[in-house]
Image (tube, rainbow, N blue to C red; front, side):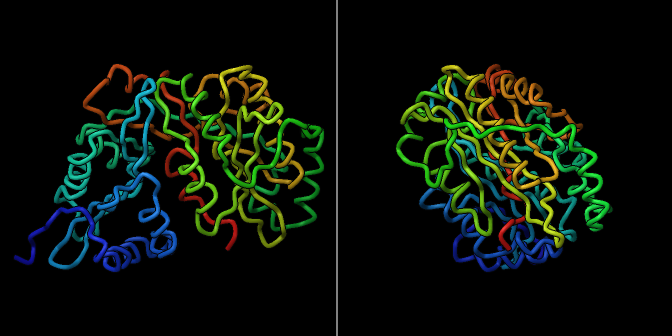
Amino acid sequence: MPDEIIIENLKLSDKDKAIAFLRRAYDDNPRMSDESFWDWHYLKAPYKDAEKLPIWVAKSGEQIVGQVGTIPVEVSVEGVQSKAIWVLDMIVAPEFRRRGLAKKLVKAAHAEIPFGLVINTAAQEGSTKLLQDAGYKIIVNVPRFHKPLFPANDIREIAKFNVLRKAVNFAFAPFRPRFKKNENVRVVEKFDSSYEKFWAEAETQWSCIVRRDVKYLEWQFLRQPEKKFDIIGYYEGAKLLGYAVLFFRKAGANGAVPKAAISDICYHPSDSKKIIDALLQESLRIALERQAGGLVTDALDGLVQERLEHFGFWRVKNPLQFMVKSDERQELLYNPKNWFLTRGDSDISIFENPNLS
């Protein structure tokens, strides 16, 4: 029957059909159907099942008309590793909507992996309701923090006029902090065995956290197509005690960098405040050196939030909803105080525009 819809795990042989669907569905965003990005996102994901792609599709005949794309991750839940999926990309072709396909796709994904994580927005009211109907619970709105540095670089109407942009940034100079380079913070070119040792000790301080082992960090921050991340580590001697990952947006035609982000930050439980302060200070120093319009981050962690505010970051209104689905240990997993979460855990950093092309 032509109207019969089949829900199934995507076969690699249907890759071209999947990309063709994304090209139609995201005709205003060619990155979503870029083959190198697709391969990185799905084929090269570090926790992908060797036999299955982390994508579920709806097919009408031989045509793909909907999909749910995910990232397989491991979550440390009180020290026990649990398989989970971040649900990132949930879309159905317009002519096939209102048939319950998106809900069926989500349920098909969770029939294989029951533990799910999502970052959604309050503006996506339909998606939120659908996910709730599929068993997801809104845990908390993740706060966003922003510190203006060269604010005119981030205001399009001003940034395009060089003289005006420079005048506004000059007027803001008294509010701009100054920092000396911290000798304990070094530029990181690769994630080596020190990161595995660091992670083994760091993860014990949180009840719920997405694992940050070497293969995940390399995939996310060293291999993402058309993007360059700046990584810094805090060391005492040869021992790694924390790191931060920075992402600078592509400069405009005038050479001004509109914004930078702290994509990820993680710290050792020993002398945590000192470590976080050093990483934030060096992140700000680098952003100031490159004259970024501002530095932004999303963080769900009490100590990181406290230190961000100490350094003058503002909490800005943001409707990012952290949602979780689990059939087990709900009293633990549904409590936001038990989670550590950053911008790099979900799709926030993945779907930022490339800064190399």
